[in-house]
Length: 266
Image (spheres, rainbow, N blue to C red):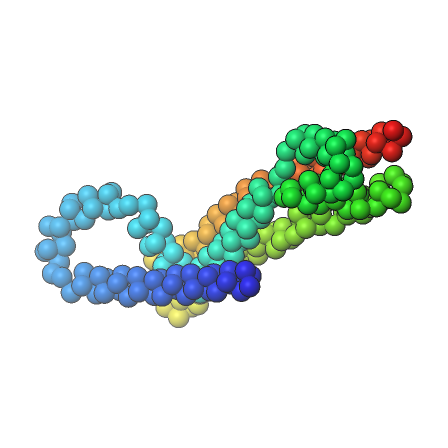
C-alpha cells in the first residue's frame, strides 16, 4: 500500500508540474503577442524600464522561463527523473535512519538479559529493539540450542539478507542518474536537428535561427546534468550510510558470538 500511495503522489505531482508548465507557456505566448502589438516608439521609451525589471527577475522565475524554453517534452521527462529519484532517496534516507542502532547499548542490554534471564530474556530484548542489528541478534539467539557454530552461520546468513534490504532501491537511483543526462543529450541532438531544419527551410544561415536552436538544445543538457548531480549527491550519502550500518552490524555480530561463547562456557 505504501508503494501505491507513493506512486499516486508522484503521478499527481508530475501532472501538476505538466499543467503548470503548459499554463506558463500560454502566459509567455500572450505576453509576447502583446509586446509585438505595441508601437515601436513605446518599446524604445520603455527599454530602460524593461532592463531594470529583467535585472530584478527572481531565480524561480528565471528557472521557469528556461524550463519552458527547453521544451515541455524533454524537460518534463528530466523533471520526472528528478522527482522519482528524490522520492526513492527520501524513502531510503528515512529507512536507513530508522535502521541505525546504538550497537553498544544493545550489546549491553543483551549481556545483562543473558545474565539475568538467559537466552529467552535476550530474545525479548532483541524483539523489542528496532533495526537490522537486533534482527540479526534474534536470529542467532534462536539457534543457541544448536551450538555456537550454528549461531555464527545464522548471523552471517541473515546479515546478508539485511544487507540486501539496506541496499534495496539504490539501483533505481543509479538508473535515474544515468538516464537524466542521456535525455538531456537526446534533447540537444534533436534541438540541433531542428535548428538545421530551420536553416534549410529558410535557405540561409541566420544567426537567430542557429542561436535559438542551440539555446533550446543546451537547456535540456543543463537540466539533465543538474538532475544527475543532485541525485549523485544523495546516492553517495546513501552509500556511506549503508557502509556505516554494515560495519556496525559486522562488529556487533562478532561481539555477540564472543558473548555467547562466554555464556555457554559458564
